[in-house]
Structures are given as structure tokens and as C-alpha cells.
Amino acid sequence: ARAAARWPGPVHALSPADTARAPLVIDALFGAGLSRDIDGPAADCLRAARRVVAIDIPSGIDGATGMIRGTAAQAELTVTFVRRKPGHLLFPGRAMCGHTLLADIAMPPSCLAATLVANHPALWSIPPVIWSDNKYTRGDLTIIGGAMPGAARLAAAAARRAGAGIVTISAHGWPALDPGLILSDAPLPSLLADPRRQTWLIGPGLGIDAAHTALPLLLTGSRRVVVDADALTACAGTPERLRGAAILTPHAGEFTRVFGTPGPDRLAAVRAAAAHTNAIVVLKGADTIIAAPDGRCAINENAPPDLATAGTGDILAGIIAALLAHRDGMTSFDAACAGVWLHGHAASLAGPGLIAEDLPPLLPAALARARALHQATNQSRALYR
Image 1 (tube, rainbow, N blue to C red):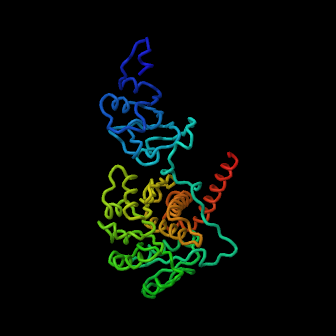
Image 2 (tube, rainbow, N blue to C red; image 1 turned 180 degrees about the horizontal axis):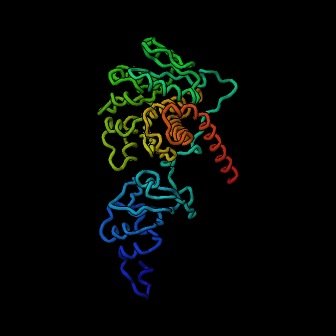
Image 3 (cartoon, rainbow, N blue to C red; image 1 turned 180 degrees about the vertical axis):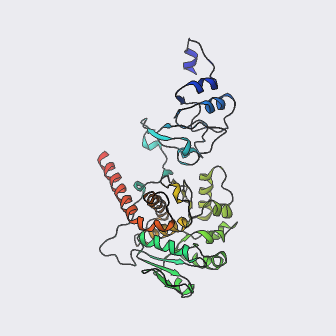
């Protein structure tokens, strides 16, 4: 305003014809703090622009939610400052930003909150395998199988490739399984009495009626339980029944059935669900959100759209459960974040045309990449200090 008051020259009212004529438009109309829909002349000018470079965030993108407020111009490049905002990571905002460049303007790190982060191996460390390990210390995972054997078998294959030392499927009347995978038809209370079985996965292919019976048994005591698929649907409208679980892994439909429609502010909805259930909540999608009961939140950005195929959710649940099962198991939040990243990286290695069965054999390479990135980041930080 001060600069405008000092300008002695002519002032020309901006029009859609101006932005349509310009070979490049620098969009600095509104920033990440936008809290209303854009309309009128501003919207008309944005719609008419051909090539756009956005300052902070494309005008019309809500920086807190990634939602489009009225209209927004598609940017080829977005230059933002200090830290990326949720709107740079959450769709549809992420797609509107084009390439996002983060510019340093010397904001001290002490001024920045660390409760919301982009998911990356720099943030967590996968437990190493050491000489004294055995199959039980590497992780004893039990998966409850049910009406659809394929889902539990996918989860089990992923868990084994992700590092679990021993994986058992609890099921009755199933045919022979893959070599190295254990099938037990012992009654569930008998398996629960085994002190080695501290980590469980329930839901993939189980069936809703079976989940109604098994879930309450699992959630008593101090076991680490990952709840997915049918076990989530069994708690439709009653999220309090999930208290005692370590990690919940709903897709959008399951989240809506259990917690209600997340609405435009999905970050707030997932954080509220985590606080209500006292569990880590992983809202799966192209921009998977991982939230902890204490408000910490991570947004994943490495998952390709090729993951939109049946069975990949079962793979993710198996990866997360395996990371949780290790003797030096990760925290529930770190296991969820790492599992989501590994899942996305494995899918990137698979490329177009992937099916769920392609992912487990690619997990060793994803694990190696995660360890390398974590080590490289820590070394660079040490040099910087």
C-alpha cells in the first residue's frame, strides 16, 4: 500500500485480456492464508492466464487444506518460503502447484513448529538386523485370516519382506500356504495366551462378523494391534471400540463409515480421529495422512497413482505391522510413517501396470533406499553442525 501511494505514474486496471495476452503471469494475488472463495475480477484474471508462476501458493488454494477456493490457476512453478504448507502437499492443491521450490529467507528454526512434516526417511530409522537376532526377535506377527484368504496372504507376504522374522496366519480350513508362512487353526484364545505373540494384524479379508468377535479379544491387554479393512468397518459409527489399537489404516470410505465424512479439512479430521481413539490413524490415499493422538502429523508424497488397485492396502497393513513387531520395534507413529513411505517407494520401482503381488519382492530395495537416505541426511546434518 505504501509503494502504491508513492507511485507517480499511471495506474491501469488489470483485466482478463491483460493476463490472457501475457506470455507469463506471476501470480501473487493471494497467499497460503486465503480463507475465502475467489470470485469477481480476480477469478476472471486467473482463469485467463496461460502460463503461471505462483508466489507462495497458487491463488485460490487454501494453504491449510489444499482445497480450491472458488478458482485457481494451474502453476508451472510455485516458489514458497521457509516451509511448505499443507496445501502444497495435499490434493488438489499439490497438483495445482506444478514444481514447488522452497526458498530460504533465514527464518530461525526455533520459530518453527514441528508438529506437521512431509514424510521422509530422515524422520525415522528402520531397526537394523544384528548378529544376535533370531526369527522371534526380528518380529513375531500374527494375522487373523478369514473369508478372503488372498488379502491376508498379501499382508503376510509384505510383512515377511518388510523384515518380520515369523508370520502366522490364524485361520481354519485353509489350503496349503506359501513356503515359510505358518498356518494355525488353534483357537484364538490359545494364540493370545502365547507371550511371544505381541503384534497382530486384523482385518484384511476377515469378514465383518468375524471381526466383531475377534477385535475385542485382541484389544484387551498390551498387544500392538494394527486394525485394517473389515475390522474397521465392524466399528462403523462406534470409533470408541477401536481404543486399545496401536494403528488404524482406513481408506476414505472406511474412515467415513467409522468417524464420519472428513470434510474439506482432512488434516483436522484425521487428528481428531487419532485423539478420539488414542491410536495412530493412517488415512490412505494419494496424499496419505498419518496422525498421532498428540497432534503430530505427516503427509506422504511419494506414492504413485499406480497404487490404486486392489490388494495394495493389505500390503501396506502388512508392512506397518512388520515394522511394529521387531524386538527394537519402532514407535507406532514411526512405523506407520515408514510403512507408508516404503509402500510408495516400492510402487515407484514397480512402475505402470503394477498389481499388489508385485510389491513384496520390491520391499528389500525400498528398505535399502530408506536406510541410505536416513544415513545420508544424518551425515549432512552432522557436517552442517
